[in-house]
Image (tube, rainbow, N blue to C red; front, side, top):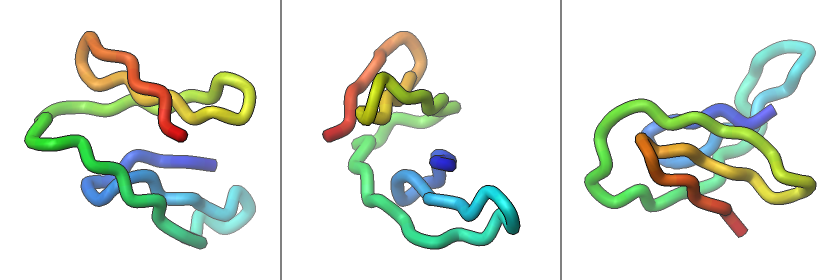
Length: 55
């Protein structure tokens, strides 16, 4: 499970909720909420009205 955190995306163990790793993501100075979802094997982030595919 991927969860947005200030430093990027945290990968969580679904059974325990423990952070297993963090994938760094540079969002610039964009404040505000970030939503995450998959498109196949590509994580997507919605930052306000902008949709970003992460590779």
